[in-house]
View 1 (cartoon, helix red, strand yellow):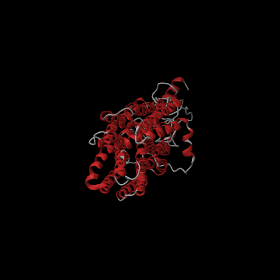
View 2 (spheres, rainbow, N blue to C red; view 1 turned 90 degrees about the vertical axis):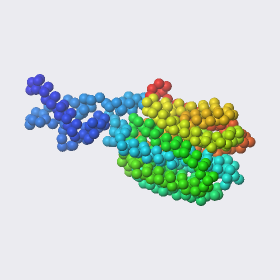
View 3 (cartoon, helix red, strand yellow; view 1 turned 30 degrees about the vertical axis):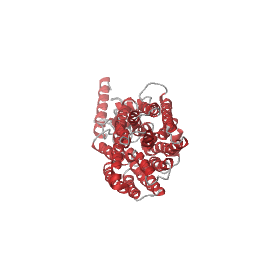
Length: 501
């Protein structure tokens, strides 16, 4: 066969291959079709190199895949590997739907998931941002015969249960998806709020608020967070930031609402009002929040929880979460009590928590966008370090109303991005099919810090005769330690290179 005929048949083979990949590979227009696994999705009884003419002398194709040699790799696949400081692999692995190019990164369904997650975070973490209001009410009301350190065990247990149970809720999410977790969690949360409205004794309050309602909160919080991560890749940190800003809005609205309602209608009806409102918002989340990826029916294996901790980069993230949560809730719990002792105007004190949470709204959103653009680990190093430094530089020496208010605003912005970026940095070094379990582990270790931080802070205050200097130093130092843990995790992955990660 002469040279021109051979050249013509090669062009015919390549053309047929290109047309076949367009017509037979689902989602060809998406970037997923260039991931190297597309060729395996062709029907077994057909070949993209099959010639139209009947001939016994079929000329074998000189290409190794249908379109991988014709088209370059999609931009977001290369970018995904650049985030880790590595080189784009020639053959990304994973079943359809799990590769970076398969994530929608937008669309009506994806943004409805974010909207539902926003309502879920308003109802759950938004209430956690009000712990200072609860502590102030309990210390001056029904639990006045208990010390502040003892009272903060209620709110610390609530934060621990909500965050720590993510290790279990994440496993259930991976196996069954978010639907039933959301429905059951909403019912349990509403029931816990109604029981809190009837509670007057210490053990009753810690059972209803610290345990029952917190279990429901954990189910709702986990389902919303993990579902959003399945819909976004390039815009994941930004989407999480928008969703988590619901907790900041809750932290603005709910303290003001509680401070006005408790004197007018009493604590019991205030809790019932919140319970009905949370039930409505979480019901909206039940309708809109769903997982894009199918559940993974995998049998329980304890190594799923231990294996991530054997990865140095992940272990550093877990330690960073522990140290940050160890100090993060101290301002939320004690800034009102500390401001009262400092002699700040009583008209300003009820608005300190709303100020912190109001400024944390852009603090939740902007670091997400910066993380997607500059690198999520880079951004996390900055905000964790800023939170610690600003505590040592403003809250410790501050004695005036102005410095306390400025500290609350700057701390609210600096610490706001941590909650939205923590799942993002975990997802960046994780298999998305295990995201529920791995995020749960990170939040569990963080919850250990939240559980012990406020009682330790209260014990320091008691040991110093009611002075808050030791608590403030402890808060700033442990959050600064969190920054160093993130630096180590980043260094393990890319060294000291200045790259996006």
